[in-house]
Length: 161
Image (cartoon, rainbow, N blue to C red; front, side, top):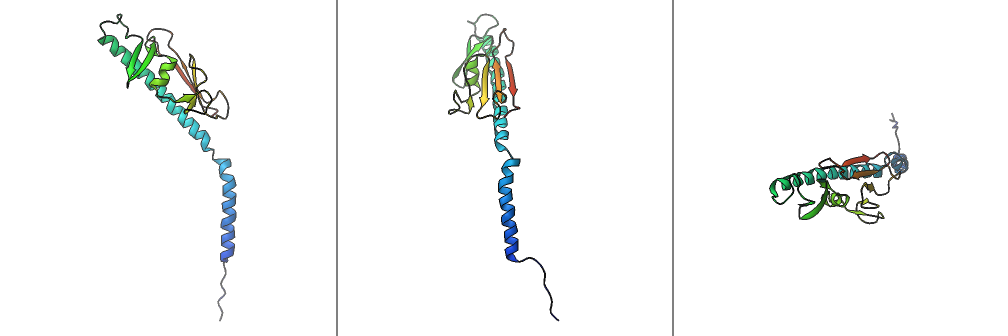
């Protein structure tokens, strides 16, 4: 008695695998936009760095006020030194240029240099991600302190990364 075997041939199995591979190669980029996640993560990291640097610079300002006998009562001067860098202050918090140094954010004006795009170093300072999906919707805004010992306004918009 002959036994009859049934199943797929090796050629048929290889063709199915090739077709699935081709479909996956075209479908994966449509479903997974890793650039969006990367820009959003980089922006959130920079946001945390800006907030932390602002607080650390203010703390150094307050310590300097306590230790500096030449300073006016209640003030720590117009700058602090963090990791060998002079950080200029206004009302006890970093200036727009100072926060970039304090947070160690590398930037350029054209997007070709640095990790972020900064159009102008003035208040309010805008730190934008490179190549966002929507301009103006993937950025950090830093507005310098306007009153003594009042924290600067730091906001993030990450909806259009």
